[in-house]
Each structure stands twice: as structure tokens, then as C-alpha cells.
Amino acid sequence: MNPKQRIVVGLSGGVDSAVTAYLLKQQGHEVIGIFMKNWEGDDDSEFCSSNIDFVDAAAVADVLGIEIEHVNFAADYKDRVFASFLREYEAGRTPNPDILCNAEIKFKAFLDHAMRLGADKIATGHYARVREISNRTELLKGVDNSKDQSYFLHRLNQAQLAKTLFPVGELHKTEVRRIAEEIKLPNAKKKDSTGICFIGERPFREFLNRFLAHQPGPIKDARGRKIGEHVGLSFYTLGQRQGLGIGGVKEKGAARGTGDHAPWFVARKDMTSNTLYAVQGHQHPWLLSHSLVADDISWTADAPAAGDFAAKTRYRQTDAACIFTPDYLVPGHAAPGQFRLDFAQPQWAVTPGQSAVLYDGEVCLGGGVIAQAIA
Image (tube, rainbow, N blue to C red; front, side):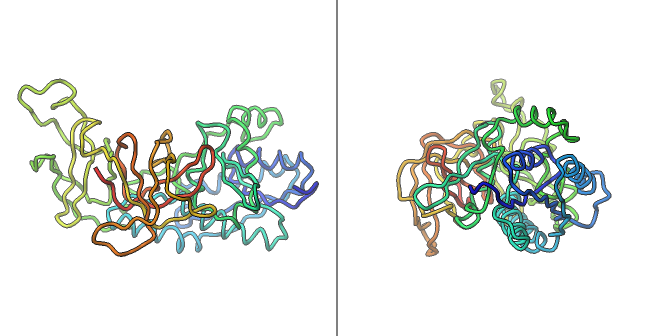
């Protein structure tokens, strides 16, 4: 980096972006804060805290002595992210809006806005890193494995990565909190957000209910016996345990933990018959997949060659060893642009609509959207 650059920081109101801005200012850069407002309609509710977050972001900017601008990207978010989010749910899949939001809003609409302000780079409070090597920019895992967010950033391309900094990716979360308290940031003890990107921590089924049609139908077990009623297939995801409303099904002579005492999990959806299938036991065969096929692929640089890698099929997951096969064609489908992963150990609740992200050690290579799980 040059000795002094103009860096526009996405200030969310949280502690990670606040410390990001502080670190860059300490390095002598000209730092400008941008608060992104990307959701409208119910800002005054207890679940959509954008007004509170902006107050926190503005307080941080005041302490650090930097400018802050409030920018509304709600129309972009609705068109580029939320519309796709609803289409996926209507099709029975479970999308990850945070990934699309990063690619389309934080590192596209926001990046474009920052460049119009004359920025040399943008920065966010994500726990990830970038590294320049051999005329390309690599996306690396954050130093703090428990906070690494490279999974959510895997759709960023070379142009986006080359313009981006992740200062807190070099730190552990405990160190970020320590710095925030040391310099007396007003949000030093603020709780981390766990809600969906820009939608907040609202009751999810209630939220979806406002946008999706729902048709109740039967819940059946692996033997086809009706064991309950669902409220609409869009409201369930594979591996889900809570909110099924299923009582025990008596199995004569069943051992504890494998019969009526074992918890129920969503295992399959049949969109044609509007049937939800649930099984008992975390390790039921219907919940385990040895392979998957992904499409809608995005690589951070060049597509990798076939070989041994590691992958995540959900965010909170340790890397799983796998064999990567590019340009895989699903039998009966002529569409190219898919890849296949074959895992050394079966993976739990591989969910269409979620992302399969490929890693080579600490380097995040990119990934795709899970189209099919294969037992």
C-alpha cells in the first residue's frame, strides 16, 4: 500500500467495522465512513435496527474524527438480492442472502459509490484477508478460525478483491474488543449481529410469511407414514430440528436415541406432492451425503483444476476433505458450468440453495450454489 490512501470504510455500527476504521486511520490513511441502509418498510420495528446502527456508526465516526455519509442502497438490495432470495425459497431451496449481498451490495454498489468519492480502496470489518501474489489477489481465511468469514466472501472477483482491505482479518476477535475498549469506542461492548444481512434478527417464518404464498401439507417419515402437518415447504430447511411440531412415533423395541426418543430432522422436500419428510436421529442416512453438484459458480481467480481440496457446505463447519471435479455434467442435463465434490466423509444435511465453498489450505478459491446432494 501507498503511504497514504483515501479509504472508504463500511461503518455498520458494529465493533468490527469501527476498529477497521481506527486501524486504517492509525496507519495514516484518509478514512471516510459510509453507512449503508439497505432495507426499508419497517425500520421502526424492534427487529430492523438500522436507525440505532446509524447512531452507533455516527458516534464512532465522531470519536475517530472522520466523516460519515448515510447512503441508501435499498432499491439495489431489493432488485439484486431480495428478489433472488424469495425466488429460491419459492422453489424449495434455502438461499444464503449474505453471500449475494456481499457480491452485489457491499462490494459492488458500495464499491462503485466509494470510487465516485475518489477512494483508492474500500474496507470492511469482515474476518478475512487479501494477499497480492503473482499479479493476482488471493482471498484468505481470517486469522481467527472461529470468526473466519471467507465463506461469505467467496463470490468476490479479482477487481473487487484488489480494491478491498480487511484489517481485522489479521486479528482475533478478543483483540478487536480490547482495542475498542482501549480507545473508548462507544460500541466496544455491542453485541455481534447474527441476523440476515440487512433484515435483522426478526422471527424468520413470520417475516417470510409476508412475502411467500404457503400451502400446508403432510409431514411424513421415511416409511411414508403421516406424522404431522407442515405450514408450507418454503418455511423449512434440511437439517432443521426446531418448529416441526412432531410427537414421537412408537417403534416397538426401539433403543433409546434411535426410536421415539430421538429428535426429528427435516430430511427431504417433495415439491410436486407438497410433502415434507422428517427422520429421527442425527445420523439417519437421509441426512448424509457423500457427494454434491453445484452450479452458479464463481471463482476468485482462475478456475482450479481437478484434484484434492477442502470444502465447506455451510458456514459453521470445519473444512471437509474432498475431490473436486470441474465441468461436471449431471446425467440427463446438458447444461455445463457445474462442479462435483466427492467427500472423504459423508456430510450432514447438504442443502440445495446453500453454497459449497472450495479451499486450498487458507486460500478461498470460490464456489457455487448446491444444486443436488448425492447420497
